[in-house]
Every structure is written in C-alpha cells, then in structure tokens.
Image 1 (cartoon, rainbow, N blue to C red):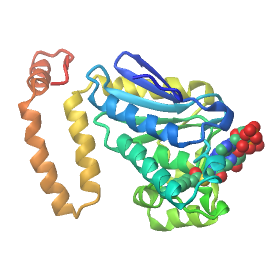
Image 2 (cartoon, rainbow, N blue to C red):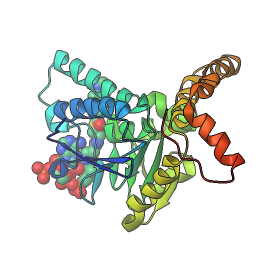
Image 3 (cartoon, rainbow, N blue to C red):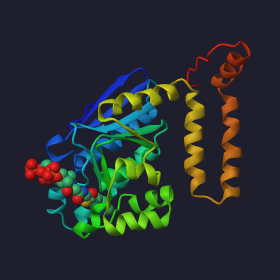
Image 4 (tube, protein in one colour):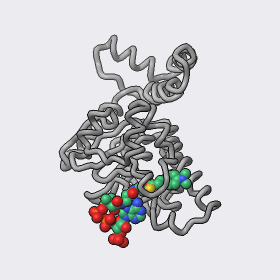
Length: 260
Ligand code: DAK
C-alpha cells in the first residue's frame, strides 16, 4: 500500500513509520488518521515485521496535535466522523500484533500525545515537549487521552496535566512514568532501534501474546486478568518457536525464531 502522509521503511524486521506533514508540524487531519489506521492494520499482519517504530518528520515535532485549521471548518457531524477516525487510528496501534514504540522527537501535543500513549512505550528526545493542551481550545482529549493517561500514571496526575494544559519536558514526562527513556536528540532513533532489535531476537508469537495479555488484563480485576493470562499461555505450546527456544537453551546456542 502507498501513503501520501506516511513514510514506511522496513529494515531488519523493524518497520519505521514517519508521519510526514512537516509544514503543519505533523498535525493529524482526516487523511492522515485513515492512513495511520490502514498502515497499522497492514503492519499487524505483515510477517516480515516484528517491531514498529513511529516518529515525526523533521526535528521539531512528533505530532503537534489534531489539525486545528481542519477542525475550525467542521460541523458537528464532521467532527463526529473525525473523532471516530482518531479512535480507529489509535486503536489500530494499540491492537497491532507487533510492539509499537513511539520515538518522540519534538512537540507531542494533544492528539499527538494521545497517539504516543496508544503505543506500547515511549522514548523521547531531550528536546521533546509533551502535553494535552486541548482545554486551551475549549476541547478535552477525546482520542483516548483521558483514559490512557489516567491508566498509565494515575488519576490525580492525569487530571493535573489535562486540567492545567501543562506542557511537560521530556525529563518531567520521564519522572511521571509517561516516557521510558530520555535520549539525546541525535541518538533518539538509534536508541529506539537498539531496543527494537533486542525485541526482534525474542519469540515473536510470545511477545505478541504478552502484549495482548498485558493490554487485556490491565482493564480487568486481578483474578480476571490472571484467568485470561492462563487461557492465553498454552498457545505458546502450539508454536514451533517454543520448541526452538527450549532446544536452543539446552544446546547452549541462541534461538532462531521463525514467528510460528
Ligand atoms: N494543527 C494545524 N496546524 C498546526 C498545528 C496544529 N495542531 N500546530 C502547528 N501547526 C502549524 C502552524 O499553524 C504553522 O503553520 P503556518 O502558519 O506556518 O502555515 C506551522 O505548523 C508551524 O507552527 P508555529 O509557527 O506555531 O510554530 P512554533 O514553533 O511557533 O510553535 C507549537 C509550535 C507546537 C507550540 C504551536 O504550533 C502550537 O501551539 N500548536 C498547537 C498545539 C496544540 O494546541 N495542539 C493540540 C491541538 S487540539 C477529537 C478528539 C481529539 C482531538 C480533537 C477532536 N474528537 C473526538 C472529535 C484532539 C485535539 C487536539 O489535538
């Protein structure tokens, strides 16, 4: 599939998705949201890909939010459709069968932060600024921000960030537990690729099941979460990868996983 607003590069089982609307600081319009949704559905099925990285074009922004100029032209029904597209795009990332890492290289605001929060984890450049400033515009974060941020860092901290529209430095976001690692701008992508390459060496089915199990269980009572983990676990025993992993250990060599 070809995309107008995304650049996709596949190398060594890692797909890098670059949001490419640099002139508008990579702001999310309807076309871009559709492309993100379709691209992540495709990557989820793509057997050549084990890990996905998402970043923004240029050195200024990851994504500066929903496209404010486009929103200013919308009526209520268009806004509803736009809202639905945002959820479809974020869900396609959240439900992607492969781990998705956000490489946040600059402004990561509003819908941009909601997009980063739908990834499995975030590495950020020292120069990045992260926040949910929607209330400055008379909106509130409506693409999962109120839900995903509160689940990640707790209700009180999420409320402070959302109500005050406070924009965090990368270091503050790290302290809050939003960002896993703060990197020098020049090494952000290579740091993300290093962790992606580590993940690529692991059993792909096991990594994918672990992602699903964490995500499903997070919204459940502990007993329910443990039940779904118990149900998912035996699926590893249906894979060639498990046989290979155990055999490789006993033969004292690195495992060579095929993802089946
Ligand atoms: N949308 C459209 N264009 C944007 C943009 C945005 N979010 N952010 C920046 N741009 C454009 C600017 O208009 C400017 O375009 P030109 O004037 O050159 O044509 C260009 O990008 C460069 O931006 P600046 O000139 O402003 O650059 P500065 O370095 O001075 O400032 C900035 C950078 C990031 C601080 C500033 O651009 C800024 O404050 N941008 C807006 C950030 C923001 O408020 N983001 C949140 C947007 S609201 C929904 C669910 C969710 C949402 C919406 C609906 N539903 C369920 C329906 C989400 C809403 C949001 O994300």
